[in-house]
Image 1: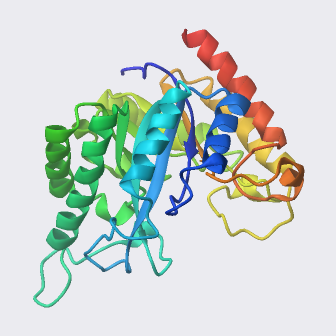
Image 2: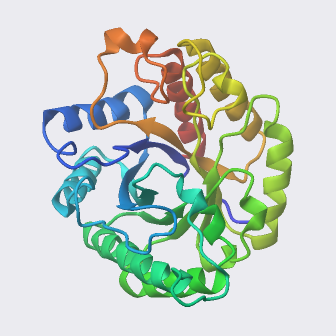
Length: 318
């Protein structure tokens, strides 16, 4: 089992990547505050591109609302100016609101029906476009997919995509599988780093880490959580992946989640860090933090929890 070096004390920035929001004073202030308040050494520059619905086969990454290439390059350059390592994370979403995990097609081609081959052709064009930008700008990591549960079984297509990415991008490659799916991906050997979404409820972290550890040991790859977080909302510590959960703003719930996650992972030296979720390109006013019930911890109790934990981990690894 290989340890991840350097440790990923990171935060996801800029989601969902709405065109026109990634440059200017607000964006620079947001990223600077992320670095200063959390003490991160990594950031995932994350943005979405749209296909119309789960069975559409065209990813319209050159169109609004997706950020422009110039905006992507600006965000990478500014992160590097702040001394951060960058993982570029292009993600596909469905314009009709369906979660990307439900993108799916027949396993056997049927005439007049959309096909995996058509979708992967468009997806490959999408990922290779940003892989070239990642290479040109010196990104230290590239994430080639996020929580695409129904695609995970398409091993041949993923291996072909990864081989093509390696022709244009020389850095380490990861794939962000969804929560509970770490042991359902058969092609982890093809990537450099295993990563997943750590939205596990309080009280369940130890058993989930036991399960994930078997996968990490089987493949002998470094591992980190490419996503992990919890809304500051009553009850969210028990269902941290539900961004629509009804409840009043509750900073304690968010802090409780982070304390348990960090405490459990601290006992597992194979957990190479976190790219927490998330920090928007345009922040709310700090005075309104107590009324904000989203994942961002700017001005909330969990901000200090994250800062202190990262300071400890980064000091120990240096």
